[in-house]
Image 1 (cartoon, one colour):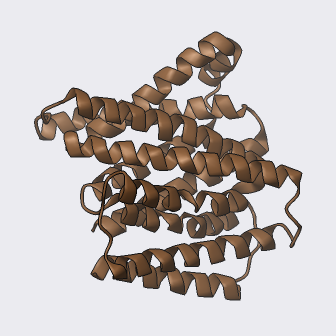
Image 2: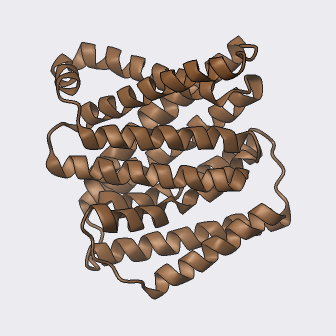
Length: 297
């Protein structure tokens, strides 16, 4: 089940990226304002889930170590990583940004193996490679088609650099979350503490540097950024549950299926007209093969 939850997480993040791109196309709020809207929705939903969880089962023992990891995970992933990702989407579009974000499992793999000392079996390595190859094939093929085969220009290079930086912080955030759920085995606590920490840090930052952005975001809650926050909230719950079942490196390799979901949702929500291509079919088969290997061995 952990593998399935990781894939659902990928679909949720894809939905978040596509709706963020749609909000940017309407240009009613800036990236920081949109980030604040998404984090605000995250925090409200997570608070309700946290309080509801307390009615179902008692709060697990809370440790300082676990809380610190949850805070770091929220700041690295929900705030810095997502903010950089929104900026990457504004530069590259959802499909191209999905190509770059597909490097997140590479950073996560390095974190899992070298920092958490996770052991990966040979067939797991094969599954990870198949998933990554499949996802990158789909994403690159789809991005080229969406851009009419255009070459990557200076804006794209800048977008790639910011996208790689976003992937690094997203992977670091997942690393801290993994450590957090190991100390405090509660996804509701981890998600709520993480989003509240990210929202608090961003609120202080905007109060100091851009109070007008904060007022605008609170006065006019952008619906697409709100949906983006909702979908990433759902995705995070599935990620936390997945991290309690399977190693970090495997979970993040499966979440690399996100570019596939981004291409499909982008076609539905952003008006992209795409037909199945050889790259799409080959990438899908490779991704499915990798997921089967990871799930069965």
